Structures are given as C-alpha cells and as structure tokens.
Amino acid sequence: MNNDLLRDPIERRSFVERCARYAFGLTVLPALAGKLSAAEKAVQVSAAARSAGFGKAKRIIFLELQGGLSHIDSFDPKTGDTKGPGAAISTKADFQLTEYLPETAKIADKITVIRSMSAKVGVHASAQYLMRTGYEKRSTIVHPMLGAWAQHYLGSSSKTLPSTVCVNRSANHGNGYFPAAFSPLPILDPDQGLTNSASAVSQDVQQKRIGLLEQLDATFGKKMADENVKAYGDFYESTLQLMKSSDLKAFDLAAEPAELRDKYGRNKFGQGVLLARRLVESGVRFVEVSSGGWDMHKQLADGMEDRGGDFDRAFAALVSDLDSRGMLDSTLVAVTTEFGRKPQFDGGGRGHHPLVFSTALAGGGVKRGYVHGKSDAKGYEPEEKPVSVGSFHATIAYAAGLPIEQEVTTPSGRPMTVGNKGKPAMEVFA
Image (cartoon, rainbow, N blue to C red; front, side, top):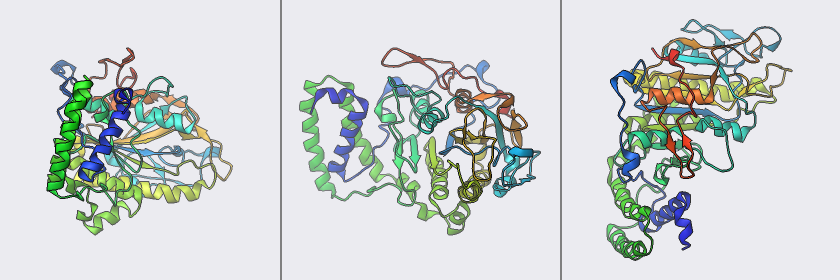
C-alpha cells in the first residue's frame, strides 16, 4: 500500500473499514473510544461562564430538510401577495403556522421558532455544507460537523456505540480536520439499521484472522511511525466489543410498538427520526436525519402536503415522545434547512432565497412557545434579530456545553471555532 495514503485520514478510514469486512464480516466502524487522548479530554468551563442553557443538551437530533424549506409556507406565514396556498392556523402557542403543519401546531408550546435566519449562499450543495458545518465551503479545507466538535471537546459518548450517526445519507467524512475516528456512522435505511451487524463468520475464524492482522500490524508498525497504525489494533478490539454489546439493539426499529411507528410515519424520514430517538436514548450524542425533496420550484402545494406532512408528523411525534420520556429538557432537537424560498409566488412554486428563512429548536434548555426574530411583511429579509448560520451553530454548541470561543488549530495552521466565531442567540434559552 502507498504509505502516503495512510497519512490521509479518509484513506486510513477506508483501509480500516476494509479490514472490518474481511476480518469480521462487518460494514461498521465503531468510535474507537478513548484512543485519541488529545481530542478526548473534556473541556473545563468555569462556573462563571455558565448561564441559562449552557450544557443542558446532552444529546442533539439534527433534522436536515434538504432543498430549502419555504419559510412562508411553514413557520412564517404571510398575508398579501406573498401568501402561499396554505392558510395560517392557530397553535398551542402565541404564534401561527401554516395549515401544512397541523401536528406541529399541537406541540408549538414546546418549541422555539427562529424566523430571522439569514445567509448569502443560495446554491444547494454550498448551502447544505454551510448548514451542516457552520462554514462556507472552501476548496482547501473540509470542516467538521457539530458531532465531531462535540467529540473533540467532550470525548466519546459511549464505549461501544459511535458518538455521531447520520441517517438517510452518507456520512461524507463529517469529521473534517478532526481524526477519522470522529466520522459519523452512516445509516442509509433506518429499517435495515446496521448492515451485517451480526458476524457472518465463526469465532474461531475471527481469532485466526485477528492473529494474521496482528502480525501484519507488527511488521507494518515498524516501518510506519504513525500514531494511527495503533488505531487499527484498537479498532479490532472495539469492533468485537460492538458485536457482543447489547447496544446493537438500539438500531432495531422492530423493537418499537407498531402504534408508535405509525405515529412517526411509515416513511424513510419518519422511521429515521424514530431511530434517532432510540440512538440518543442508548448513548449516541449527535444524530442527523435527512429529508430530501424540499426544492419546490413547482407544485409547492402538493410538495408541502407530501414532504411537509411527513416532516410534520415525525417532528411532532419526536417532541412529544421525548417529552413523555422525560428526555426533552436534556435533548436538543434542531430543524434545519438550506435556505428559504422567494416571496414571489406564481401559483406554482418559489425560487431559492437565502436572505431570510426559518429554523426551529425544541428541548435542551430553549424556551417553549417562543418566536425569535422577525422577517419583514413580505418575508424578504430579517426585520429583527438576524441569526447567521454560524450563530445558529454556536447556539446549539452552547446548549451542548462546548467552548464556542476556544480556537482549534487545523493541520494547515488555521484557527477555527465552533460556528465560525458566531455568537449564540442567548434569548432563545429559558
């Protein structure tokens, strides 16, 4: 193997994953918990630095609506010529939503809506990257997701389970410039859970293969003085622990009552959100669940009834489920999207519009039944309390107890912070 490839964290991760397939019959990479001491040290924050909301979010569920949710047709209804096809409806809180979110209206007294999000990026891939990382995309560096930031500062969240999981999308090496072991575990289909989580080979065969791999590592380690070589041996041990662990049950949706699965929605997004609840309940710190199909240039009304209905059921079910289990105060649910849609409505759909859009938060120390910020009468730009994507990330990071002002130096020597020096929106906290 080309030695230069092993100096790249993505190539090292691919190498380790291939070892897993051949040694254990697995397609799973565990978190390699506790093996990277510099990144595993918990951050010490003085009591003076703590205030409302700090560190209350022990778990984060990040709901990503890919394509650009129309703020005017969801969380920020308007009147006049920019009004969409859906009527505004009352909620259990002192604000309105559109008729496409009837279930969310029933739990509106448990959520915070941010109506003044603002960005400059209106292209799908770049806007999605910005929302996932808090940074605009650059050709020279790959930035980490919030789950990787949390693992860097707080350490691994479980001895056997990964600290970060992505559902309904590939992980895309979301560790950024952090170690490859901080990458999210991808679950492409929530109904299938972990592919090949049960080993297809006997323990005798496993032990023989481990012996051969240990011999390989011993020879290879003498030639390559790289700290990541030792991680391969740690990986074998962690994989065996994962295979034997009862924590694997967290990935099995069949364990949930049929009635509850129906409540979340028998679709990929709804079941992915239910899986997220199971995972955070079992020790995973950060779970991202993706929903596609929100780029509604045409047939917006049909799209909001379809995609909007799936989201509405799943989000409301999640908030209610977490609340009934006593988990909502310590779990932060974030509803995110790439950008908003243009105020101009021609009866079909709306174009891209990053100048103002809406997000939502629930649990994790944020206020209940609260609206933060305001867009103008037409829904064109923020009128009060604008919130950048970096500030949105800083708000989530603050809720999780991360040191948002502390800098991390990348391998290329650049100082970085969670949320790109954005300031948290402190008014959202109770």
